[in-house]
Length: 379
Image 1 (cartoon, rainbow, N blue to C red):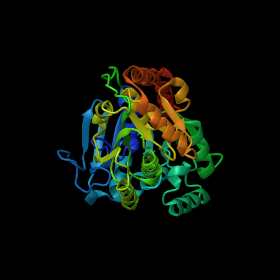
Image 2 (cartoon, rainbow, N blue to C red; image 1 turned 135 degrees about the vertical axis):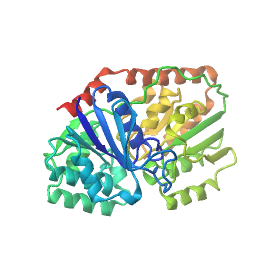
Image 3 (tube, one colour; image 1 turned 120 degrees about the vertical axis):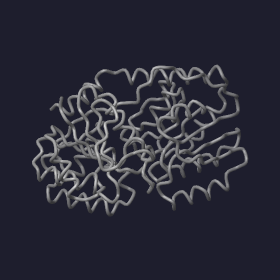
Image 4 (spheres, rainbow, N blue to C red; image 1 turned 120 degrees about the horizontal axis):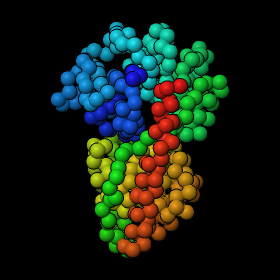
């Protein structure tokens, strides 16, 4: 069985980094019968300084068959440790997540190249997309330009999950870069969600995402501020990634009309998200860009239709009757979509809810995605 050594800033039991953690956890869950995983990660969650309770740092822990995790404490984040971890076994693949961090991305990649590992894979998780690069763009673009000039990524393979991510990788890394496409694996699910009761003229909506400009909560609030004719409850779930941006959101919340109730619920562990989503009518996510969008799929899995931007892989949702994907340049269409869902009665809503779950189940059961991910590490 092939051994895969992976470096990632955050992993289980963390959840605040959102889709990056969820994507890799799902991948390991599906592939642990095919490969042996050794995962090196931080002993804290995203935005946290306190180590995970009950976790022993700085040693290998077997968490399930073929899944081993090394939680690196802040005191032991040293070049010598990372070098030792790379050399202590004959790994078949070094699998690195993200590009812009030091300890769990740049440094492991540099050391893996020094040790001439035969297969190095980088999962960029959409950070080369227009929306993600728009945040702290100067520093990111300077870094990428330097890496491209010194051909730092020469000989590595980039993991892309969709065609537009492949284009982004070629644009920022180089047209001749090696890319392997393998779609992101979803969370496993089998049971249909509980049916919700929908009252005409009322709507409960939620956004599940870290609070940052690329997730576009401010845009969502601006739209809601123009929804005058229905009683709407809107909950925001996720860690605050950008305090200045969140302050702008809070300022706008104070001017929201009285027919709209807005609540911030903080972060919720990923294993509870599906259950939480079953309590809402609609997921609202006017994101500036997603290479996948795990919370979108999980919303479908919960029988919760979505109103999202058209900057994700999830397209043609209106014809599928599972939601709408709308250009950000057309805020009026978002307002119309919210009003349309608010007007639905129970019978009409049940159709959307059932369609959403059926769509998710069909996607999850696609055997081609598993084969793509197995091939990612076998090529």
